[in-house]
Length: 510
Image (cartoon, rainbow, N blue to C red; front, top):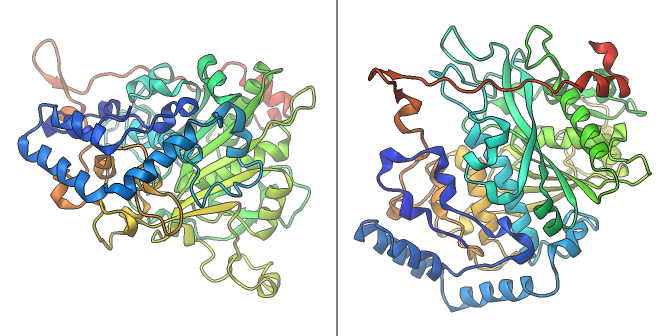
């Protein structure tokens, strides 16, 4: 059941990251999807202890966004979802088996809920990340793996984190990596960049397979990182990723971020690549005999890492079990840039990786790099430009959204708003197909859009950038002094990582 976050917005000083607990969405229980009407959502808000003025705003919101046609559209979604198409029966189709043909226009309700579910898993990387330069834990995850989803109010997803992912911050990406201003910090040369999670038994039964999910952190505020990385294409084999074709190239910055390490730092002793490959190998072996899927998600720069890691997993053959079963690998990405050249695109497709890219047509990031030579250029010209270091091509299938179609969002020239992940999830919830009216299918709370942006229309009375830690994380000690509390130490790498590296032929690098 979708519950409005308006009932938890006041008083504003009490807002914390755990405010995610105040909402759920259709994707949280996709096999038994229930899509409440906006009136249901607003009724809960009207009975909450909010002010009369805020309640009137919610009523106004309902009148503005919901008419009889909208109600009919929602009812169609409910009827479609309550048919025999249970997620456990059609997950391969939703996973891209047929390249999502016939599922995007009109928008398939089950696919929408799945995209939002994985988008929430990518958003969790932002909500759990410590961005505060005045925190000695800046650049780390706020929570230990075992409490990751519960701490974010996402226990209902039915996944457990199996390991965290780290990268060395020695790469020149000042707008991606965050460092504390204090001399005593958790790590001087590493940043937390994502996690690997596995569906529990109950969720596995509902999904129709054991799902291994990888979520990569991206960039949430400034977009200068895309300029930092617009360097040149580089053969993937140049960074020891096995590839039989030397003409397969990807953006060098993405490749370095994925493969670089710092042996002097306990968290980045192993590269992100080594962390991913060993964990996927371990999990595939652990669940031998079960129906498996590998689903990778990410936003912004995290989208590029998602595509690159999907390529690496399949190129290395880790998605093939000991008994010859091929585990499907899919990428569900949001607002991602181009990653490689046309040869990379062709190689990725030949390996069977399925990619669905969700983009906002007004976002600049999906248009970069490759501003002049890309998939939109005539094939003959692209053939001539194939050898150039600035010739890029998007991969997979693209789902285009337009924030100007949402009645909740204001017109703005701020590129960060168009790039915002919560805005993408809001647009997904209201998207039913090209030419269809924007109607929120699950009643997902529009207030989430302003969690880290200033994008909602002012008359909804939702403050911009409202998600914050109470007292900026400061707590009162027993003697009455205000201090930054100590956090549990994050585990770095599992003890058996050397064993798996040896079996992958990567142990010689250490």
